[in-house]
Image (cartoon, rainbow, N blue to C red; front, top):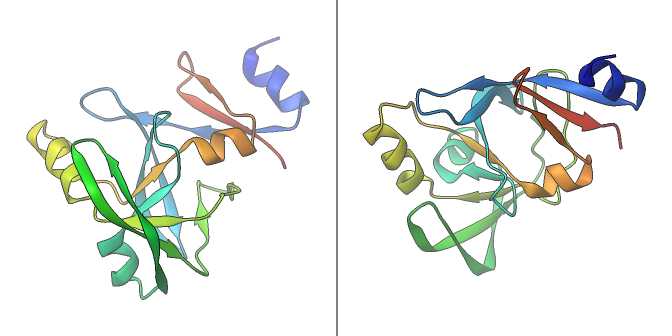
Length: 146
């Protein structure tokens, strides 16, 4: 029995991943029905959307009383996004909360390596909520149904 078959028996759903030109895993998804590029980041504490993309989609945001950081950015204002649905193909991940930040620093670092910008960073909040398994051999993310 393969890992995928075993996890399917355990009520996990498979999300097919692809790799960027520098080896990061990513997945195509949607945010309120609009296509987004999602970076898989096991080091990100929360799932974070690009503030610019969220505003472009007209989603309501509320500033939080804390700052965020990551991938070369520090002291960035963090917003909570209300009423947003993130999908990874057919899978709707359970989020602690969808946050938004200016991801210019992330996308600038990716651009320097020839990688297209991302709209969302999928973080540990989702991996914890779904007891996630990443299978490098099949380039798959498995998320257990809540």
